[in-house]
Amino acid sequence: MSNDVKKKVSDSLSSHPYLNLATVSPDGTPLAHTLGYASDGATVYFMTDKNSRKAKNMNACPSVAYTVDEDHTDLARIQGIQMTGRAEVLTDGAEIQKVLEIMTRKFPNMRDIPENPDYVFYKVRPVEAQFIDNRVSFGYRETVLYT
Image (cartoon, rainbow, N blue to C red; front, side, top):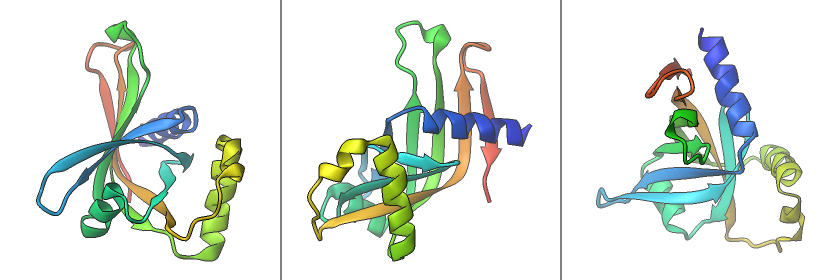
């Protein structure tokens, strides 16, 4: 079953443009951030300013959580992902180039963003995912662990 859930997670991530990322500030305050992302399997990537709150929070505490879901007014149709993971800044040039290619395929207008030395790429490695599918039954979820 875990491979089926992993495929559902991967397929869902590849078909959505935005996620809601939760980070924790150094004083313990949780913060939520909506951002565009690209994925490779269950690993997500995004770019942000190295001086942003989310970057500072992830640098201090790399444990993050995020959600990706369908926006439906019919609660019985909601599907989504609740993920915990570990964030890390990408420093390897080859990996950054790969991520840039993945992101520009998903967001072609990224080609128009001027280079900025303050922009950094992050990778969020998955730890645990819950795939929620209210179409099966209200509150239905399947859990998968990543190693």
